[in-house]
Figure 1 (cartoon, helix red, strand yellow):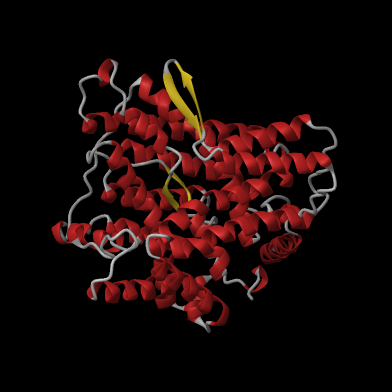
Figure 2 (figure 1 turned 90 degrees about the vertical axis):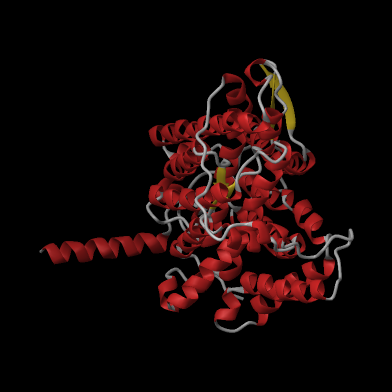
Length: 473
């Protein structure tokens, strides 16, 4: 099996056709979850919610903007955040004050205004990190905290994988086994695009089953092309400017506490996957700025909040192609699709079972990265403090499936399970005696978390610096 040592860091060596296919694979990996958010929000707002077209263009442009902010170094894709679903639901149900006589469509811009403010909170944290240094901040997130949080990121998504797969186990298992077969026994290009092959082959099977009149487990049609038939071939995304109200801001903005913690976990996971020092270079402050501004810009024009996507981290781990240019290709695909409603609806007709089957691998990969994080950092679980911290994080991250809701100024605010797990881990690590983690003591482990300086990279940098000096002479 491939390792990070034989990973592909410059996809141009594969040729442009293969690069285009790899970008398509990342686009498919994010597509299901990204468009699911507007579909769910439309349910809250009775059909007057977010637009799939706006969602796609905001995800694509947000990803490209993130890459600019992070010096084109971080192979991350920004898709729709599920953390804000509770906030959308709350705003949809507001029926006091200015919201008393509003239609659902009139309430939506205020929810998006709250997202704009939430994105700006990232800039505050980024400024703090820039002022005090990322190493001081990351002392609050040792491997005994970040490892279990990464595990929770993957396992918290597991129920959705099973729920989607259960709609049609034949399609789900087909997608799963195709991914496994090509990843283990595939040769050449087939080995690095197993997700794309899983989607294409299982979709072809869905077409055959649908043609023969077979149905899903609940009796529904395997494929539904009604939205595709009614969609226009081309069309400009229906942007709408956000609006601001204190009540809606108090609902949406505090959710940023959760997503910022998730961002740190995702950056650690991507750093561990790729074996690069992304938290220090280009810097956590830069990735936070990119994520926050992408979220604010999306909300400004009527889109959902953005977040770094675990699905695409899973693709990185599976394919061992770490070139950020491939992610940017996926972002370009998303932008282009946003202007072709018919094509977008055709892709969105992909059965949830296929998404579920592929997710078995992707979500599990994320959790496996968290376990590797703990192992490489040599976390000592013979010590009670470490066991307690990990135990509380895991139970909080997986147990509070609906989060915890409290009220501020009469408005309900919900902390997601991952935010609760992160806060619990950070607090316990601070107050429990016997902290055995020291930054720099285990360089290999620090590198797996995106911290520290990679000795190999250091030597390379010194060599390049020496060559530049000699040229000047």
